[in-house]
Structure formats: structure tokens, C-alpha cells
Amino acid sequence: MRLRYWLLLLLLAPLHSEIIDRIAISVGNQVITKAQIDEEARLTAFLNGGQLDVSAEERKKAADRLIEQTLVKRDMELSHYPIPAQSDAGPALKALKANYPSEAQYRQALEKYGITEEALKRRLWWQTALLRFIDYRFRPGILVPDADIRNYYDQEVVKWKQQGIQQIPGFEEARAKIGELLTDQRIDQALDKWLADTRKQIAVRDHDEKLP
Image (cartoon, rainbow, N blue to C red; front, side):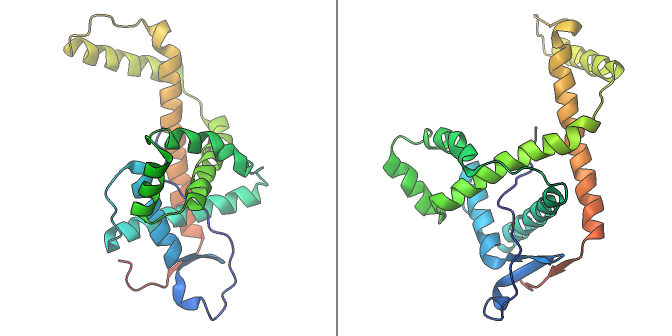
């Protein structure tokens, strides 16, 4: 399932005059700052193992993701969704750190991308919260008919045969896996549609002329 490239949600911040020059975008009555956009780009690059890129194009992508996250947070609040504990991100952090031969190399990677472990923990926590909320919000409304599962299976069988695969699973054997795959795809589609519709309803203002 596509994870939708999500990061930290933005909390409502007062528009004091001393920080007004750092506000990049407002989404309804919430704000996204330039520092948050920069951190989002750095965290995404770190987690993807990609090259650090804080160009205008990447900052624009980061800003779009943060706008979507802000809309989701608003929906969480309106639905009184129970937010998971910060400690729920512990297993994800432990698994991530296991990719590094030593603590020192892990710390060096954080420094290379210009992020802190605290920011990383918040990101992993938010990712956990997000995935649970998406499941809670959209899965109950998804129904995949048997005919769709059968059609997908038949198409896959054709591909497997073309690829020369000998051990092709029977329909009943593959049914559950295909059903879950199609459910995840339709959850993503429902989420995309909801985000598109919600963005039309909430005022989004760009305060940063450097964002394309």
C-alpha cells in the first residue's frame, strides 16, 4: 500500500509578528512554516535513502504533502479519533536503526541530512498514526466483489504464463491476497478523492513567493 509520503502534522500556531516572516502557507486557520517544509524534505530524503535535495521543486512537493497532512489532522480532530501514544513509534525507530552497523553511523546519517532524532521520532509516530487513521476512516466503506477478484486473478494468470511461471496458484489460494491488494488500492483511491474534495473546501494561501 502506498504510504502517501506523509510527515509531521502541523499544530495550530498563533500568528505573532515575530514569526510572520517564517510562515509559508496557511491552511484554514493552521500554518505551515518554511522550517517545517525544509525539515519535511530532509526527513523524506533520509527515510527514502535518497540524495538530499532542498531545491524549490522539492520544497514545493514537501509543502503539498504538509498541506495534505494538515487536512488529515483536521479530520482526525473533527472525528475525535484516538491518537496513538508517542511510544508506538518505538518499533519503527528500532527497525530503522538496525539498518546501520553502529550507533555512530546512524548519528552521522542524521547529521548528513540535517535532522534530529526527535524530528525522526515524530515522523515515525505520525506515520503510525496516519496508517491507522486511513484504515479506520476508509476501510469500512470498501467492498471488493468476487467478480473483481476473479477478473484480477485471470489477468495475472495470463501474465504469469507469459513469464513462463510454472507453479501458478489456484484462484482459492490467491483469493485472500488479491482481495487485500484490491482493498488497499481502493482505500488509496478513496483517500485521493477525499483529499481533492477537501482541498476545494478549505482555504489554502501561499505566503512564500519562492514556492512555485
